[in-house]
Image (cartoon, rainbow, N blue to C red; front, side, top):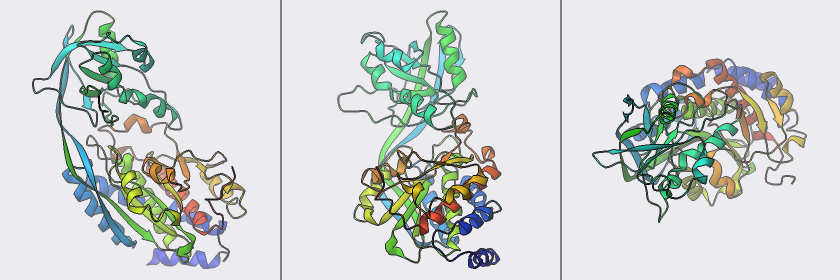
Length: 452
């Protein structure tokens, strides 16, 4: 209660004007001393751990989300179920048989198919780039295992990932050239041996499905070094199961005083891969948005803020399910944003076209400046994977750009744990979101009538 009273106290002292930059600045400063995000993230990673959609931990994560939002004072806490074809990992192993025996660090790719029970043993063909595989003749890899060993470039934005990740779904290219299995260098900026998994695009009708896995970066390089000397033979055993099941999205509201002005939809995804505990992907996104909304809850604000914990981002489905469940309410969503690039500092804010020119939004630039966050005039192309469907249906989005320089060292690997989260940077995220939400919740600007 003392926390709420303190927030209300500085709010009453602030100007009564809507979209008040003084209120936003005070929320920013309060967030820098608030431990809610760390508490939420520690709870999720400790009590639930890895939570792939369709696995037994997903139901426990659902119940955790309901309990957490309720305990933190959110209203209208809801669970939305949707059908899910779940891909779940089973036993996996790989090794170089010759010329130099070596146990491989690997993880099967989501939506991949299993090998036969006895596994697959075949010679490997190494391509240094995805483009080299595309340029290879159709008969180049008959009966062989293809490895694409293309490094990823480290960038502050996610651009390096966007370029490199195309190789993760290149198994159909290998299959079309006769390959019996596909390996990819982990989509990672790390040189650690931990492999980084991820989902492939589902196989299309008419494509010959083959097993696929990601190799730890040093192991991919090692195979390339061996292959430069003489032929390399690999044995792979990749087991997995696919089942029809149910996934769940959990949400809760911070009600506004003027519901007709529209709802702000924010959040992160509740599911994670199975190799780590999903701390930065995407427990952090949930923790950041929950903590920021809770801070805004203690201040007068016009728009309702809805925090959503989407239930199946990694292997897909939750964005489409959210659109289907809310297709008749899209006009009531003023704007949406998702936190899904870890827990390192925010460096930029992108708003819909024309928003930075609005008189009651422009002061936000100065509010964010002490956090070393730029007002970026280029509108966001998307607001996050779970928002793609509603954005495509007309919902405006905003993006708080996080520093991804080290994010892809740990993303989708066993090292995605609480140990890699910096509490100070986590609080900076909450401060950025709280200040931004304070302005967006009160502005008179119509994000649907943007300047082209």
